[in-house]
View (cartoon, rainbow, N blue to C red):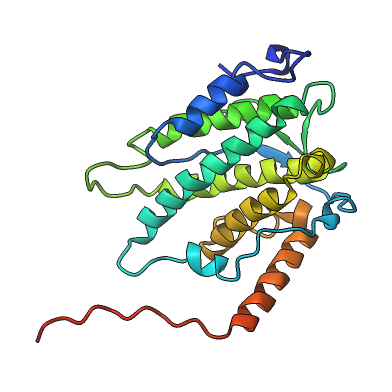
Length: 256
């Protein structure tokens, strides 16, 4: 069933997944997969607090680290990185457990004029539901976890990827972005107070450079954080210029 705002404990801010359940997801070895279908209300967001994000775990080669390795299939790499990034999203949702509640965040939003409604992945034609932010994120975690364990989305034992693989991945990464956007625009002060700003920035850039490199999100999808995206991309461009051209690995020599 869909987890609703009524399932949230007003004293803890946690939905029925809560920290123990969410952390169980973190330790699970689920395969790989994604989600689809929901609706949003487009608009712009106030990024003043957000633009203060200056600290970061510097890594001038972060774009190279998410690039497709030689000899690895594109879909296999997208699947592997999606599982890896999903674990970072789960961690972020668990951090918000103590600060994001039905009272503080009655809707899943990214600024004042952007909000999102929930539609179950396996029932994309269902009526969109207005959920508080934490319930939306708990549904996202549970829904994604179930999908990643679904061999119809993430094939096993060398089976081919189906046509719906990439559309599903795009939907999933669109949802991942919403967790980052809500965190930056509504909980950035708490993140900074807990000295987690550098880690948040690193996780977001890790996701951003991967999702952009493989065209898993559009400019419209990430519009609520467009100025921060431009800032991080410009910083990365400068860091890469400072280290100079990257030497590509030598391909293995085949015997004559």
